[in-house]
Image (cartoon, rainbow, N blue to C red; front, side, top):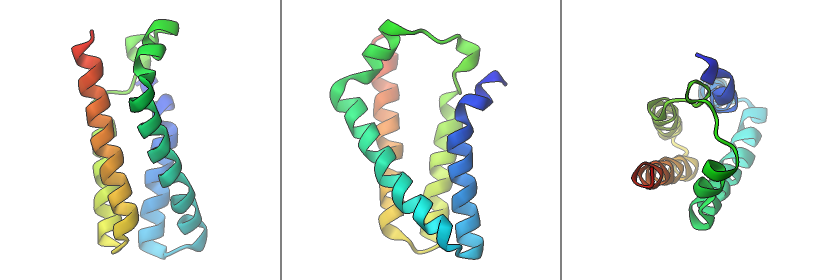
Length: 113
């Protein structure tokens, strides 16, 4: 469970999305509007630039420090479903693309091992 601290930001974003869906808090709106495009750009840049190769070569993390892939799939899926429930299709689409790009990145890294 040492990996849980490395996934803290993703957990917090999911919590913000839950709070936004339940309460429609304006601060939650801004967190989602800023964070979603930012993480989307980072995912696109990571795949386009081959960041997985750089991370693997420069600094290997212990296996216990790396969050399992299923955990991120669970969070991204929850974010997608919650935003669809809130009828916020643009942000839900962003999370769908983030989820797909994460799966592509995972597939690429598993074939290069």
